[in-house]
Length: 116
Image (cartoon, rainbow, N blue to C red):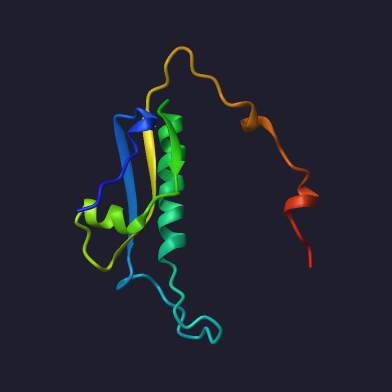
């Protein structure tokens, strides 16, 4: 069994978000993407909603997207049809916590949105 390491976030709780590739919605009319399913997007929407609610409750969290999904699947003994999408670490902030300076950096909308 492979192991995963997320302890450097010093969080007491890590939530793993997956989707079931056998039950995820597929668009039968889509002629361009034969293997497309909505599982990753659906899981991401669920995770984002959970993260927003946690912040409302005063629980800080951070998205952990870069991980070895095979190691995660093996570590948690996931069924073959459950695909790990992301994890997020959660904890109450310490008194010394402050956002990174990068948190306040914003690009102009013209650099991120294209109007066709």
